[in-house]
Length: 230
Image (cartoon, rainbow, N blue to C red):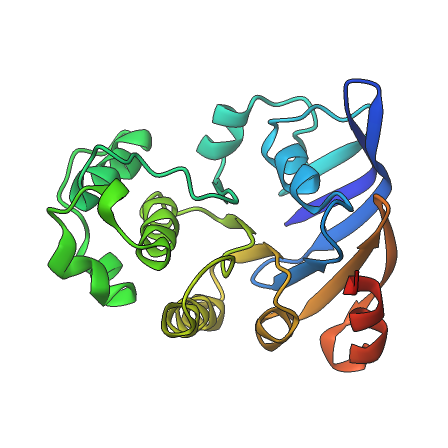
C-alpha cells in the first residue's frame, strides 16, 4: 500500500526526519509513536505532500508519489486528519461534511453510513463547527475525511485533548473500519494503550529516526514507554 524509503525532511535548514523507512500494508493499522518533537507530524505532512523530502522515496500502490502535489495525493485516495482538526468553524456540521463530498466531485446528501459511524453528529448537524467541543470536532474531522472514501487514512494525535467517552467512540470507529479490511491507517499517537489496542505494527521514533519497530504483540511496552517519557 505505502512504502516510505530513506526519507529525510527539513524545515528550512533544520533537518527533522533522517533516513526514515516505514511500510504500511494494505488493510493494516500502523502506529508511529515517540516523544513530542521527534518528527511524527513532519512524517505525516511529508506523506501528504505538504513537505517535500530532501531525499528518499514514497511509493503508494506501486506508484512513486514523492513529488506529487497534496491535492493529487488526495485524489489518489490519501486522506489526512491533521493535529488540530482544521474543520471550518463558521460552517455547520452538515456543511463541513458536504465540503468533503464536493472535494471528490460529488453532489449528494451526507451518506447515512457516516452517521452510523458517528451517531453523535446526527443531532448536531445544524451547529457550527466552532461551537463544538474538542471531541465533537475530532469526530467531524475524521468523518469529513471518511466521506471522501480514502484508501489510506493519516491520523495525527486523534485523542489529543479529547474527553474519555469520545476517545472510546473514536477507538470503536477505527476498530470497525479496521475490521472491514478496506482502509489502511497510519496513526500518530501519544496515548500508548489506545495506539497499541488498534495497531498491527508499531514504529517508535527518536530524534527524527526510527529507534525500533515490530509487530505490536512482540514489542516490549516498557521499551516503548522509555522512548515516550520526557
